[in-house]
Image (cartoon, rainbow, N blue to C red; front, side):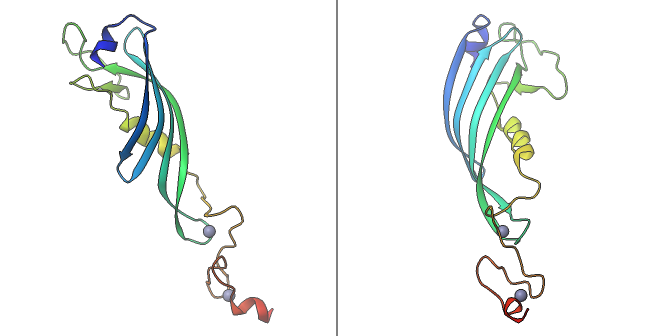
Length: 146
Ligand SMILES: [Zn+2]
Ligand SMILES: [Zn+2]
């Protein structure tokens, strides 16, 4: 990482990602390009096993979410002089050891990818309004009576 920071603008590196991040697995690729003041990261990732709750039948299920983003990461310290660099509060930073920490960016983008009303399956039948039975797993008696 520190090596890339000292290269000229336009130098690129691509990394394959296959990592466990908290309870989820993250797969995909990260393309890093040296830009004038830092590193431009282009992420193309899939997060597997994200725990969601169906908005229709209230069943917990796991889904895969695709996350793509492009963000500039700035080093906290000048790569040559070691001096603290000024920053905007919401900059993504490359930490003291010159390690690019994408987990914060990942967390933020993951939040935006989570659907507002997730469905366990496209044609989820939901819960019976009469007895609360999950109609995906079983029929209930209400239906026969009507
Ligand atoms: Zn459902
Ligand atoms: Zn019912």
